Length: 530
Image (cartoon, rainbow, N blue to C red; front, side, top):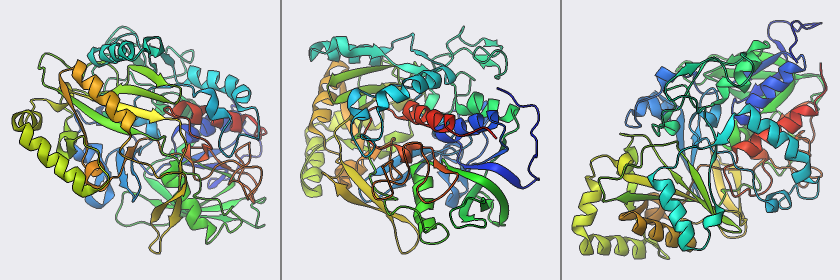
């Protein structure tokens, strides 16, 4: 539904809703609130990117990495904590700029576990919103299996799980390769699209207009309805305007995230949607709970999950194999009831990760692991030198993404200097040494005449990596259980929502982007029209 004009339209710096962050939850909120006749402002810390702005390879660090201290304003961010290293996206469109396009629906256990399990029949409640999300994101099965996908299918056959292998559902336009056409998704209201050429560059930003990033669907349509998007800005403060519960609105401070001189600006809004992802939303809520929003639940920062992931880089000695061709994730294999693996690829030339890998070894402490690495070099010096000087790391390497639905949680707290710190909350701490992941990686490597390697922080410090950090502002029946209710409304405040990965209240065990989109669709569906 499109509104051509709004009655009682707010003044220039007054909005019905201010959305902090433009990832999956923020983009959904921007469109659906605009459709309801609301005046919407989206504030995004990162930059606007066009196809030509993305780097050709991830060696172009200034265009790829988000490191403001070095004046690098790319779209890929790496954040290191004591218990986990987090990979995330920054920019208009959030994680959709850098994610691997894949959109799986979690298994039944996800809907029946975690802090939200008793609040609704979630599998039934979310089913229509998953359908909407899949349609909006242009999800379709990957039509082309490449070398790494076929090897995964063979692995499935070897472990008796071939029937559990399938092409991934991905958010990519598969028209005639390289051919640009009128919008194929929204009856001409969307931008032009170009058929995927299977270059493997999805995660360094699609330079060929084929990836269905959020600025091509939800955000594009929201702008047509009047939503404003302010990039390169961050929000340090949200203050209730009038009554303490925010029922009379909020005064929001924002400032530049890229300029050295950060002049403060202010707007007012009747409602707030926090959509900055775990690293943005939880960090801000922890700060605001100590200052301008003291009614926030003490559960802010609790129930943080990592999807129990392991990222293993499998580098082949066979120069005839090219792992860079295809989409970022082309297939998926469910190896048992709680586990699945996906082959992940980067485009040709994007071999930055070669600087950060070591042989895959397991061990109880760093001394044992260091000894095993040294022994590996002594036993296989030529093999390791070949890997070190391989001609094109991206072409010769398939990354195995291993994820489990088994549950363990961390918590985030705010340190004395305003940074976030992690601690173990429940269960075992996230580990870089998952025996099943190592076993499957070795079997997969043998099929490809390859050797498994891992990011160096894992054997050196025992710190695992995740691209799917979740939780920290989870659902509960009241503020003693969670930060938000089952409709994503923040306990203690009126017209305040959380719609991003921090709301995820159980371990999905799969890539969470589709689930974030579906839950946000449901939350916005329950907001009354203006």
